[in-house]
Image (cartoon, rainbow, N blue to C red):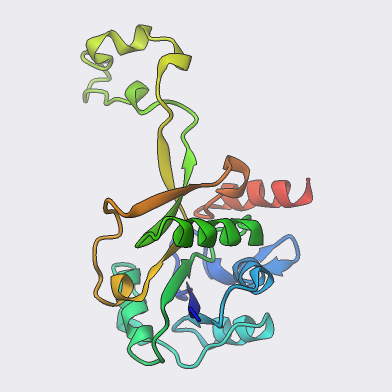
Length: 224
């Protein structure tokens, strides 16, 4: 039988929003939403929060996650990589077949997304499933301005005259789900290969909390 581990990384430091991972969102700490979705999905044999904070650890345990140890401060700085924190965790626990990395800053994620991502992972025999959402505009309509604000060469090959419906859809990583084989996380292999597939999430569930405006928008969506 296959085994599944969920890891939710939640360091204490945050420049944009102090204590972001446990800030109140519609009456609950932000991290509780990811924990709740993981539990409700009934997928995981274990749900671990990786943190350097006793306070975050206490809250995570209250909502049903495990925090078997705190990670060191050097893996929790602004420049620290999540990949290193994941490896630190994997080196200290038993091995699982698959790992699902969930971000606490994606509170609109629901159990359906996790179940769909798992189905895609197994049905396609994929190495990794990564969540994405459709961009509101096509990447071909994105360009750079010169230092003086000039738009010379902004629209190359006359693409700005192309009808919107003639463009192919383009997608952006939404940061919510990274679901793949143990070795990819443990060996810090490339996530994005021929055998990695994008799980498309709707825009309204793809909010990534990085600012107070994001927080207000997420609160609005939760209430409505």
